[in-house]
Image (tube, rainbow, N blue to C red; front, side, top):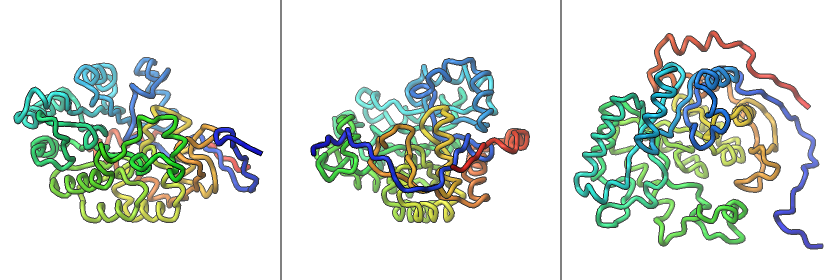
Length: 365
């Protein structure tokens, strides 16, 4: 009997607890998200309605990284959201790498000046997108390394302005491997061949993440947020060692519960050991479905469940396991770390007391 892989959708026969959560069990700050790409009907809502709906699910502060797409988008978000609800929303600025060709040796200083201007208008962080390290080139057409010292003025300015730098370099390790029968993300790369980054022509995965590590080590006065588990969720020992070395580094685990949930012992150890520097974020837009799934991963003992609402797990054909984190760790990850990092005032963080105690609806089947 012949069966095509995309037709193979096994239904687990194992009987295991399944906990249904409406969302996190306490108010939370979503520290890695967007409105532009994923907001859908939510983003089309009036700002007041948008934030009321988010708070109904427990999200009391939302970090939008879309300002890094351009000055027009940044100014639009500042006008539409930040001006109306500064206590519930912040948006990060970005670097326009396309200007390097025309600005030449002056690029880094001018980029730093643009960052100052973004901060003056209301941006509260810097988002660096994954083309950095993969495709960003200087005026000579040479690929720029993540730790290129010519770019130091950007990172130094962020530190001087006390702006956290949320940085995404590289991508899952499998994206850099040959797309063959041994690639665990074969399905995903088949659906998105543009996500494959073979070396050559692209740099190796390790050269990119080591460049990131060098960057963080070199700029101890700048706070970095390593997006997606410092971009190396497949190697938690590496991530933990970098956190040990660099007190200026935080991480989020947005879009990476698929990786963490298949190594639950190591993931739980990482989150407990470094509980003061891990931020909650989903990278899925203002999505109650995502918030519910992430809460299930963090809070329950559930075993062997799908990390995605899609019937077939899209990132790799495996299931995940809940971490059942201690209450103090959950408080730190859901709220306290981001509140401390972003300097939220007491009037804002005290709003955690005004949200109903029981946000989450649970039930075992």
